[in-house]
Length: 159
Image (cartoon, rainbow, N blue to C red):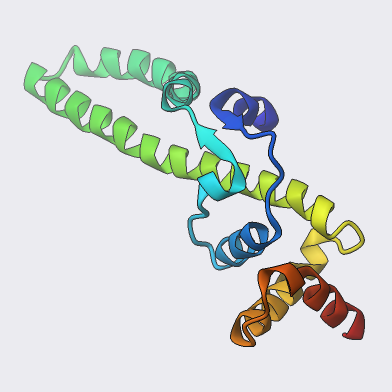
């Protein structure tokens, strides 16, 4: 289901992710930071994300609103208005969390796919932190971009 949501909400570039962009995205993803979607080659369609979010929110909201209607029809109308304003605000605030969540899921998906291209013999879950450390050493040692892949693979083989 998540794959269908991601495929619907995102546009993905056909261009492969560059090695250095993958390594930077891996570091950011490991540190729970927001990854630059443009460097990984994907873009969120906000309109489609709203459609998915509305469908997801309607599942619990419609039964709750039917239940709340029977309660609030017996109470003062002002209480009903205040609660509906607060509830609406909460729904719109949670959209931001949903948007961040699906961007993180898509970033993880694209990173894993690019990982299989650049490091096919090194499983992502096992080597993502090791390669991050090697990448930090490479940046410290000012390894040129053209020699970066060889430097990382040489250090992986030595460890």
